[in-house]
Length: 146
Image 1 (cartoon, one colour):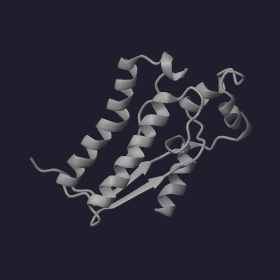
Image 2 (cartoon, helix red, strand yellow; image 1 turned 120 degrees about the horizontal axis):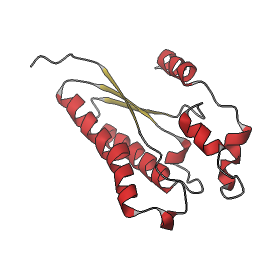
Image 3 (cartoon, one colour; image 1 turned 45 degrees about the vertical axis):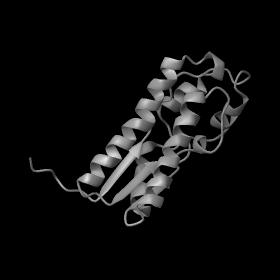
Image 4 (cartoon, one colour; image 1 turned 180 degrees about the vertical axis):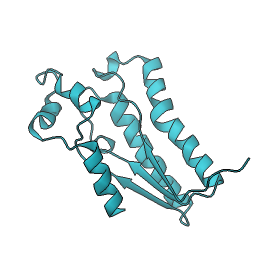
């Protein structure tokens, strides 16, 4: 089979999962978020390395380094995703791994966050106060920079 060669792989976590206190998140749901946001990205990285890709950009988040009220699934998996890319860079210095945090984007996830009752999740106040950026505009800025 003839595979198309490429120089860059862009990776992102795919799900936020449920929002709620950590003890309320069901184990099965937490495992599903790990599979989607962490394991799937490892599989994609490994496949791309085997097929000659040398550059990787991981779409990171403030949630990778700071916990937000009610975001167990997203914060833990974004943190694990961030650490995977850091470990790959350490283990494979001949390849290029970069993490980018585009900020607050105007997405379905952002709409979902803004619909939450802020008194239950005080950390969410920044999502009400900070204007969200159009994802297309953010992707163009990322492309220009990297």
